[in-house]
Image (spheres, rainbow, N blue to C red):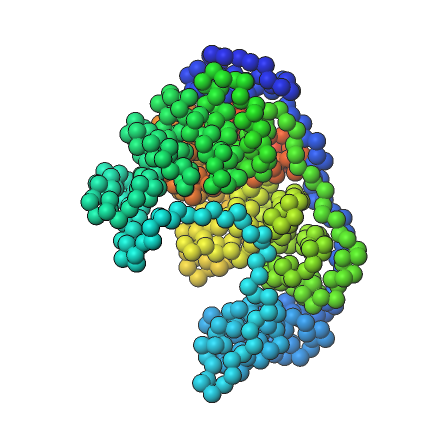
Length: 612
């Protein structure tokens, strides 16, 4: 269907912005696709340096056998191998595995105390310390406290103070408001908007709150109203709450903006979106999203002269879903640099004698990748500022993607320096039978789901790199044992990735999902059943951004934005085009297309078979 432009204007950098009359979307047509100015990452690229192992080949074999035997509770056999070790620098980890075994060992206080005396600077020290204190006999001294356990690797985030009434609140009043807020959240989670509004009208509530407190709670209610399509009432309630109390909440402005947009009140929508964009309370995601929506509202209001200025605000956050959309709409080049963080030899000289460094390398040698990541993360806050990049580079050279990512985030927060190869690492794991879905998409899900931690486990029981629930894995693999005694097999990286990509393929073959990246991500996070329910209820006017922002689940909205943002950046790292980013930037649904050579060829064969 052809665009029906109400307004066309020449923008900078050879870009034509078209207002699509039916959808009210800013469709972007590039005179020439923006080409990445960065050097794409070659497949299986070698790191710039090599960090040699610290353990002998014989000790590597012994340690691997020891860990395997202890996992099976074969302590005597493990002890015989421990005696054969020449290098015992990993005994802290060996004993931790033994003492904290869930079923095969009950450690006594003396064992735990001795561990703390020798290994209190190692990962696991806090856990051992807490257990030791619980098992300490009354007539014994406390064990030594952990070293460096409480230091955060990340820089302090901007602190935004919550609203406090001028008049001090009594304990009873605070308790009343806490319970009231909990009740409101329960009602909204169940879609009981009318009951929530009835609570707001109670005399006791009005006696115990001031206007700002009432506006903050009203903002939560109007947010749910918007997602249930109660647009007129949402705007009527959210707009005055925003005007009165936007110093203390951005939610009222955001709800008013979305409601006004869907009602065709684009000037009002822009006013509220820009209020979120300018708010000191807004984080990076909120600034970028409100800037893009402000630009859309400006264009729909026939104020195209403001579009680029607003998009430029969002574009200052290039590692953000909306920031990438803004960059593409502006026709800007890729801001990413795919050079590895420098490995400073002087810094390595200063660090090489640190026991944590040698343990990290040794742990990686013996396959204890998760523990190696913990080791280097524990070290990071203690090193001098000038050595932090060297520690990050070391993690990259050793090949620990979870540590690369977490340390790169820390360097970005502390130093303001973005090392994109570490922020978006290429993990070493491959599915058992190879990739059947593009690596960029698999890595995008993996980064969001587990941050590349093979042993990640959610509170709901999702496991491994792709955070698969045992029930889902059982269904995909057609193996009931994955719901039972074999569920821990999901911690195997290669097996987990194989099932994860198989599940992605399953979703792509599901009616209503197909190759739609937004819906693939929504189904992966919220489940296909919930997606079908949302699709029936949401009136998105065929607008992918409005669909995302109309989803009732904050977790799913966040998940979609992060996965798609990851996906486009991994495409860039692998030197691949991003047609799905072009699509969503021009108001179209983003579709998955296989671009890896082997997958593209396989998809052509499958399509030919279907067409016969």
